[in-house]
Length: 613
Image 1 (cartoon, helix red, strand yellow):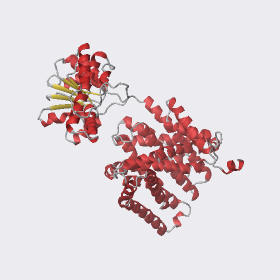
Image 2: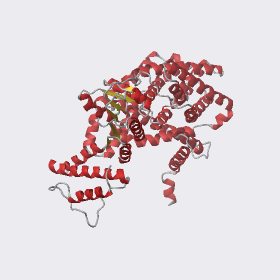
Image 3: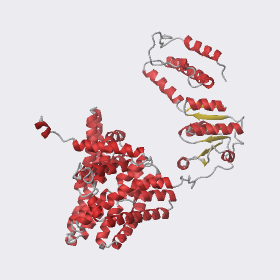
Image 4: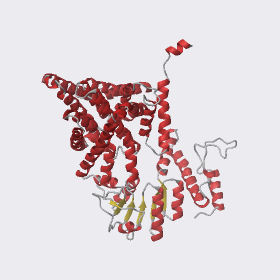
């Protein structure tokens, strides 16, 4: 047994890593702190300067970088080429400007700290490369990754990831003796990189879709998962071998597969690995924090962290404001991107290997970046608590004022867009208001005129012409807002017809009690249609389906009326349950009679007991 234990797999490191994350992250979230901060703190605790379970955090970092690679692959899957082309101005304009300005500021700061210009340049440009992993994780947790604000940050991060390639070449060229390197060797390196990109594009364009189609036909789910991992890691390896970054290769592979029919399947297969490895990356960053270096150079490290984060944040904020970004968004972008990132480790290691910096400076600069990464979640939490609630920007939209339509539609999401079509097709003049600026701007792209206005405010309703309309359609997706609008309108204009979208039975009952003239649960008709189609799939004829659905509708309507008078649990006898009963009330039927006698009797009995409103 002892021999088996000696030759078995050492599970202690694996259990320690998983346990640290499982304990730390929920604990930090419990106290309102960020999950990234939990991973980083857990890494410090189990690393060489904590309880010492790990002595080589760099080895873990190398493995955990795959989490960043997979994260960028998933982001690439969301970036169709047309969408990426639409961000070209942000990538080549905003991204280049931010890298150039922040690089100049931080290089100047390094010279002030006493470093030579070349060393200051390496330290500054390494810090300019923001942590893609941390920013993406923070944006993802807040649900802002796909928003216009998030997309601008993604564009900058993409440019920074690409910038590591020329920076590595420049450091090698500026190194002592680097000028002696032949121009031929640099040309060969560039040619290899371009050839690798071209090869990846060709493979992604012509081979990947047929490959996944063949694998899908084999109906082997585990092979599809293996193929997804092969695509990510293979593209990353190709880029690494050609002198480019692994993350860039994974991102390109994701972009090339973004229009594939297998995109969602790939994303689902990669997601578990991405999440675990990304958490491992944050743990590794925490473990890599060298407290000895910090202790020996405490004043220098502290000064570098404060000055570099401050100057980079100021540079980012200034550029954002120069390009007419709102104060709140500019401040949040500065807080998110003020830290250094994982590609700084690569740049510093390369600079040390070619003699630009010594190992002592490498350790100091690395500690500077890691501390900035640890501080970023704290900075973001502080900013979000100190900043006032974001005011809604109405730039580029018109306020509701003096509208003269015959029908007022409040809310122009998916429901409102469909509901308005019969009116517009009939030639009825429709006024539309909504308080979502992005939706209003998107609607204008499709030829709709939507005005900005909050339907829960009476003054806005007056400005929208409610005193002149013949009907109001409340199409908002928030049940509380819909109820407030209905109450407000019926109190001010009791005779005005109000038709409202209800979220569920509870909100439908509330709207009925408010006095709306018509309400419909937002999913009820689609669910009826779905149920009817399921009966057809089971072999019933159209006539049989119509009979069953007539009964379903009558039961549903009768139950709703009973609930209005008697509460949400009234009319439960009208529901069919999937729980078997010893004595069924009526035998199942597939054909024949119209509404069942059982149902008719129940409805008649319940209506007799409870007068309907």
